[in-house]
Picture (tube, helix red, strand yellow):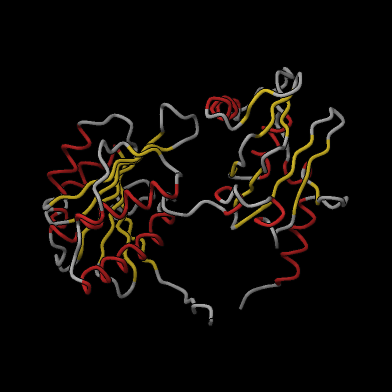
Length: 308
């Protein structure tokens, strides 16, 4: 089977008022979709846009008060995004960012956006990267479209999967297989990935792999607890991992990872394992080797060379 061919994409980011902190308009060349990104200070400018008096979808996103370091999201659809988004924003206090999506030719129907809403909720649930604030999850099966329309909406979603991470909301990206395929032995599901480890003089031992840009600490790894050195920004994350049952008490002075967990960086992972501020670039070493994560990163950069 031939692997699907990939192409570069052109994304146009327009700063509506000419400032980096103002309202942003995002489009993809050749796509009729139009995405607006606003914050609390630019919400009025967003709702003043005539393009939002159209059928579309919207997302409210902000910190999750119940999960330190997490993101809470509400996904909605409307015949008039401008009116509905005001109502939804007034009813919720967690949001800091608003994303509204319509089309330049106003060709989305109510059925289209209800399908998109249901699919986005389903995709976000499966990815498990955010907490959904939606009280209900509409069934995709009850929001069926003609075959051609469904194909068009799936292409619409494919473009949204490109745009959302660009504007800072990576809620649809599937979790690494090292996290999701826990029924498969570690050696099998991490096959092809380089394994890193921490073996510290304290006795703590941990293993991790990097997959698709994410640093995953594997189950069975250990983390120090109650060292008295944990004076940094990751303390809230560690408390949340304990609350979620990802870190569970083990032998005295240690936690153990009951489940794999994907960190945003090697340093974040090292800080949790060592219970202190840590430079993950040097703390993590290739398993059975003296080379550090930094050594591997530099070697990769040199082997890839400059791009044309």
